[in-house]
Length: 165
Image 1 (cartoon, rainbow, N blue to C red):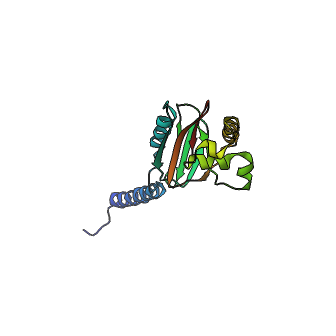
Image 2: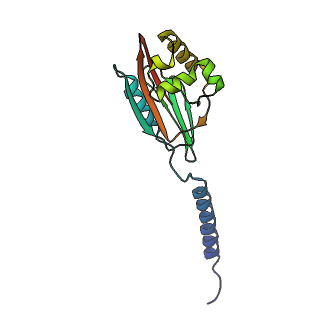
């Protein structure tokens, strides 16, 4: 009457192993989803595709960002998301203005992104175009992500540039 059934012991051991395995899998899942990179790419493309100068902002829920002239990537604790950009090439402007940036023109690009007219930040459209080319040619690195990403389409003479930062 008080005998231990061998089958019940195996069933309890199997249940214990499945429980431990399930807990292990649940512990490795990220606590949050990856960042919404498709919304950011849509915002960038909608400004870049426009025929007129315009500006937009998009909130970011990411810790790191990487911009190239044709893609955007966001990283957080939930993972990494990448999206291709389908509009014209963008000009990444992520670094804050420093002495180095003032000499290569990206400090002026930051000022233009923040709202200053390009004619106030650059001597002529050629200097503006050269600064944008240098910014696009720079190596894309992971950088700390801001709370909001700004996108600005700017025309200066015959130069049309979409700044993102």
